[in-house]
Image (cartoon, rainbow, N blue to C red; front, side, top):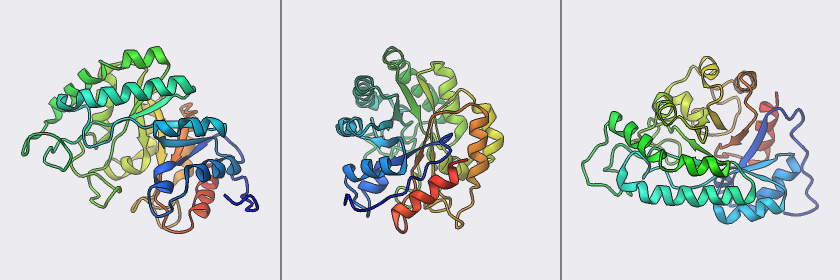
Length: 283
């Protein structure tokens, strides 16, 4: 990043702790280097980066930043299918150990797809995991790893993803944990403080809505929060429907003190969009 470029500090109140999202800035059209993402976060007053692969953890530590959410396995092959347990548990275990080493807390996880005919599912074509079997498989699978996470002081965050939007990385048709209640049932049945909810407001709005009335019932269950504009997964501007400030206040009312990942896909100048989002959320 050019040292002459001045970025204003955007975080003022600091009750909401934003996190820049690596993949939307690095992997898509922006192609920001991870170094630039870190430098931008520091300049904005943002304390964390989220959705971070293990190899980037040392760089975050160097900049005094937190990995608000460390990557493990991906969302197609998940814990709802025992055929994928070895892969998922291996990747979860490595992420848990890396987080413990660097002093970070959260690791992401996914249910996986129920419709196993999708590409990369790795299962028999035409097979389908029922809701009941998917929940049981997830519970049995997570019980194999939560004890290790507890010992390491790490929280595994289970993410609901919407299955309604078929656009690339805006929704995931076939994903089993598409409703909040599915993920909460898994979390409740596992019964460990090391398995909590990744409350992705964008995905939950699409599938379930009624955000503010749901939040009080999530007290003590949310490990991480993510935001984006709906529809379209774009900026948090006047072109989308979610009224974010009262949603943030509702989270504060239940004592949520974790990070809020800015997981929107920029459609214009990304820095401007980040500053606008941080300002909006900074209640």
